[in-house]
Image (cartoon, rainbow, N blue to C red; front, side):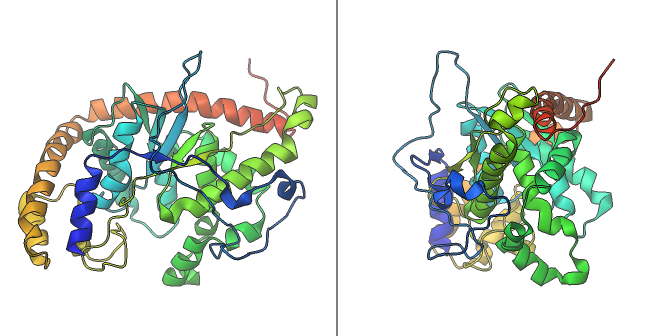
Length: 374
C-alpha cells in the first residue's frame, strides 16, 4: 500500500499524459446508430453496462498534437466537482496533467457545479466551494494566458444542450451506467433525483459543446465518455449531413467525436485507509486522503499514522515540498476576490462564444424556429 502510493507520487511528478494511438470504443460502427433506439446487447468484454470499451493505449507515444498549416490546436476540456476538498488523487490524477496539456492544446478547464447537485448538498457551501476549487486550479499552475477557467453554470448552453441531447438518448443507455447503480444503491431511492440518472447526458453536453478533440479520463469515467461518443454519432446521423444542409446549415457532422486522453500508468491514487479503493472526496473519513490544503503538521501526522516503514520520511518530505507552494499561492488568490472573479468572467465569456456557436447549430439542425435578434 505504502509503496504503491509513493511510486504513484514520484512517477507522476515527472510524467506527461499519453494519448491513445488507436481507438475503437465499443467497436462503434455507424450502422448501429442508423436505427433510433438501438441498444447494443452486452457481449463478452462489456463493462457490464452495455458499452464495451476497447480503447487501446500506446504508452510510448506522447500526447503531442498534430500540427497543421493553420496552426490550429486540438482542443481538450476537463473539470472537477466543487464538492469536498481537492485531494492528492485529484491533483495527480487530473489537475497536474492539465499543466502539461495547456502548453500543447487549446484547453478549457471548468468547475462542474451543476454536477455537484445530483445528490443532497449544502446550499450554503456550494458557492464558496466553487470559488475555492477555481483558486486551487490557478494555484496548481493553470495559466489563464493559455487556458480558459470558468464555472459550468456560468455558461447556460451546458443545460440547454443537455436537454436537446436527452431527447435522443435511449433510457436504456442511462440505466446501464455503473455509477448510477452504485450511488443510487448507497443513497436509497427516496434520496435519488432524476439528475443522478441523467448527469451522463450533461457530461456529454460539457464535452460536445466545445467540439473537443480529446478528453482526459480515468478508469471510472471511460463508460461516460463512451456514452458521449455514441451520442455524438447518434445526433450526427439523426440530424446532421444532408438533413442539416436542407435546413440551411453547413451539413456534415454537427459534433466532433472526442477521443480519450489516458493519464499515465499509476494515476489512480488509492485511499490511505483502504488500499482497494481510490482516494475519494466522498469518503466519510478525512484520514483516507491527503487534501491539497492540509497544513504541514496534518500531512506529517497522516503519513506517520501509516505503516510505511522507511518510506515515511521520504514520502512526507516529498508531499510537504510539493504542497507548500500550492498552498501559499492559493492563499494569495482566494484573498483577491476581484482577481478571481475576473478570471472566471473572462473564462466564461471565451467558453460561451464557442458553446453558443455549437448550440445554435444544434437548434438549427433539429428544426427549431430561431429568435430573430434586432
